[in-house]
Length: 443
Ligand SMILES: Cc1cc2nc3c(=O)[nH]c(=O)nc-3n(C[C@H](O)[C@H](O)[C@H](O)COP(=O)(O)OP(=O)(O)OC[C@H]3O[C@@H](n4cnc5c(N)ncnc54)[C@H](O)[C@@H]3O)c2cc1C
Image: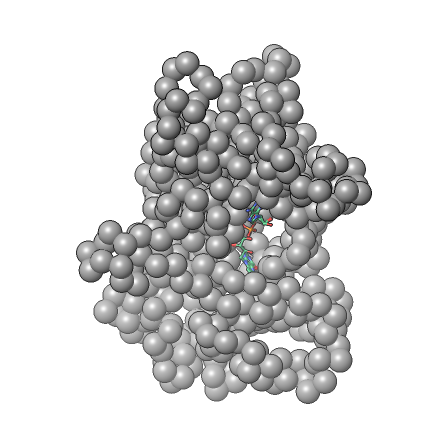
């Protein structure tokens, strides 16, 4: 069955409360990036449809939920908002070296949030501002002839709306029936995570037009990131292990519960088991109460994040004037906008969402906007990542020892690690022996 989404179904009210005839912006994905974009558009009176393939926002959880205080500015959420979804506030982190020593680094108070509650809060805000949220609606492609966005509606009953718990307000009792909806959109925002189907449908998932042809430069790369929730008495701080595979962590969730995770380039099973045995105890399996792993993209600034899809058959359009085409923008994990050092991407995705919305409203380049906002820090992170990936144990021991010096630790505390370009030179000035790392980064 194929249905066209009418203005009435898809429409949001504009500032004057009228349903306008403008085409909606379709946002795919209710992760932080998608809900942020939907909210920013809706609050400016734009018609927005926010799609989520799952039956509720925020599940399944695939995240540790560590957020620096920059989240407040990036999302415009209040401290009370964030507090309401916070499991733990971290005032310090221990960063371990291979020799077992650690650097004790104070933090301004990082939030460790419940991602499902955090995501539900952002989606609810978008909906309250006027976005139409459609749960159990999966983006499946773009009609090449008409340029319409194709959406599979799972089950025929309406599942719109997100209740306070993040659950759908209307339960869907007809899950077996599904339909394809066709939406004429002015723009399509792919906030659909690391394996973005929007990017694939728009032909910008990867590229083979770079010098050297279809080499690795234009490919997407990922880290595997298994994570468990385990009953374990923790130290009341975040523990990072930058020498364990790509990075590993133990993060408090409750008084006697932690989220333990690891990023690896290869199969994580063996290394992650060994890590958990070493730091959580041989019987960690018996105390494991949840699994929250996923994959995380490695930042690749060579990939395209923006294109225009034009209908191949203009006669198939119903409008009299030829369509200017539909802008397609990728944000968040779909655009690989993730810190290559710790693989956090929530704040970066929210920042990219703002750039995307500003670019749509101003009618200018999204890519130029997000690169200005994010690229320098992500590129610096990429250099740091390459340096760390090739560091010997002895070099790690030295790095952690130097980072533990009070004058260096203070710089980490006072400058947000989401923006490493702001404190790179300060670190060097405080501890010139860190020059070895700078040399490794720029080799
Ligand atoms: C184990 C782990 C730990 C992490 N820890 C942290 C951390 O501590 N801090 C941090 O900042 N980041 C962390 N990250 C990274 C962070 O989770 C991501 O960067 C962030 O979720 C990206 O947000 P997003 O909105 O771009 O995409 P996602 O959060 O991936 O959201 C994508 C959404 O799109 C939906 N979707 C996908 N395809 C479709 C489709 N075809 N149709 C409709 N809907 C679709 C999905 O269901 C999902 O809801 C972690 C990741 C992992 C795996």
